[in-house]
Amino acid sequence: MDTRELKERLYEELARMGKAMASSKRLELLDLLAQGERTVEALATAAAMGVTNTSAHLQVLRRGGLVTARKQGTHVYYRLPDDDVAQFMLRFRNLARARLADVEQAGRDYVGPADHVEPVTRDELLARLRSGDVTVVDVRPPEEYAAGHIAGALSVPIDELEARLAELPTDVGVVAYCRGPFCVYSSQAVRRLREHGHQAQRLQDGFPEWRLEGLPTGG
Image (cartoon, rainbow, N blue to C red; front, side, top):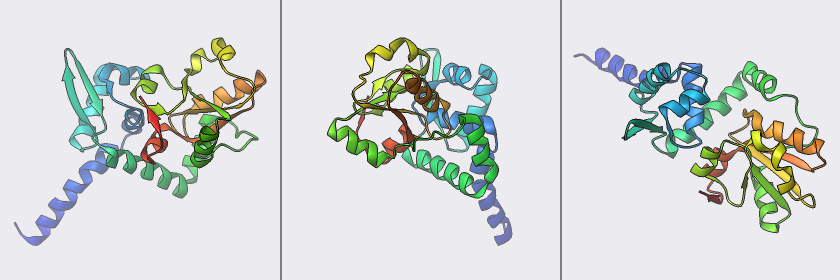
């Protein structure tokens, strides 16, 4: 095999990861797995896909080195193999937002209109947690909270928020967070909380960013 053939082989191997990411559905699955390990069935439900189709996408991601799997009983569980992949996905998303205007616009269209109150940064939230003048609510599904959450946060899934408003104190501000900047749950939570008189804001990003920054977590 000559030098040109060896070089082409090298870049073909590198392209495997790029090909694994070349699907909107596979990117969504990676975003879900950044929240924690899940079964194929749970991923299929969250991504609104059939189990067979979800499994096929996960196999592509596995061949590309972006996920790992384990079997327990009759279920197969998938997860991101390590924080390197999680960091890579965050950098990839941020680069796309910076270079592709359509990505940012699509994100605004999905999440909804920007709040008139600035979102809270990680550093600001950490300081407020230390001073005890904030209630933090995790509005992701319970299984994601159980897999890991901001230390001290209450689990109040978005579909339970209205019924559990009485659990939230009114004498301090509330900060809601979910999966990341393109997650609608925290924006929805803030709007509902303000309608009921709470001083509410959302976290600028989400739990994966918080955890990868090495900030206090529970779960």
